[in-house]
Image (cartoon, rainbow, N blue to C red; front, side):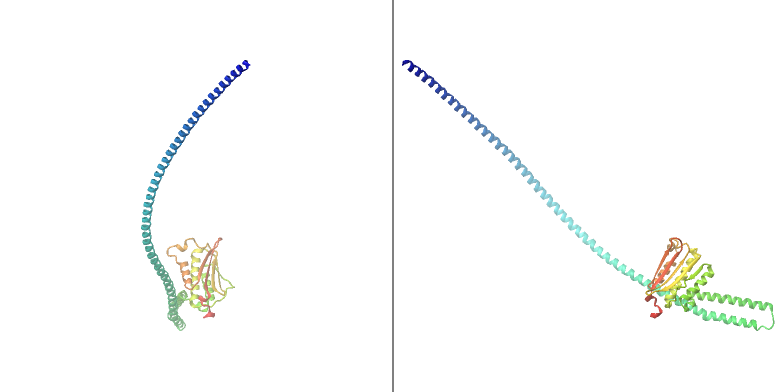
Length: 345
């Protein structure tokens, strides 16, 4: 019985020791835990302080940057405001200059318009003057031709008749006297032919028979003088024109014949005259070398220009075409209402 109590006491002591050890370990664990918690708290505090310090540094840096940016923006605004003021000043200055230039240009344009109107009026007056002078020239030629025909021509005719009568009424044959009268008659005949040529050059009387007949006569004379074969197309038709229109076409034909004789080296030429519902046309063509380049630009070469001016005064036009295989073709046309066809006169 005593042994049991002894064992119980021994076990109680061991249990007490174990409990004490457990308490000691628990206290040690509690102390360790408190130390760890204190360390964690200190670490958390340090981290928080470090974080707050970092945040403070970042905020200070951002504030500095913002201050610098605000300063740059203010300086930029000032520079932009200065540039804007300078640009506005330049715009105002440039606008004033442009207004001055614009005013000058308006004045210059007005002067140009006035000069252009004056030039157009001058050109119109020159055309009118040229047409008037040409009309006066043709009237003067006609008057001179009439004067020569009525005075000199008739005087020569009377002189020829008197000399012829003198020759027939000479009863006493005298060889030298008879030869002298024959020579005198030949001289009178030569003078009369020269007078007729002068009259025809001044104003061909054949024009009174119509333009077609005048062209036919002129071509015959041209062929006899130059040997160039001349053809007046049989389908050409007589057109009755006023004297001015017929004379203009005839003078153009004469100018073309002169050019053909001097420059074309042609052996044949063809003339056609016809009228349609709107226009009167005369076409002249040859088989020569054509119009020499630059011919109408030569000094003192006014043939083509004179033809165009003469016809344009009557509202017509002159068209010149050089064929590739040689020769050239001139078409002269004028409106029927301008040419005053006889049906309208």
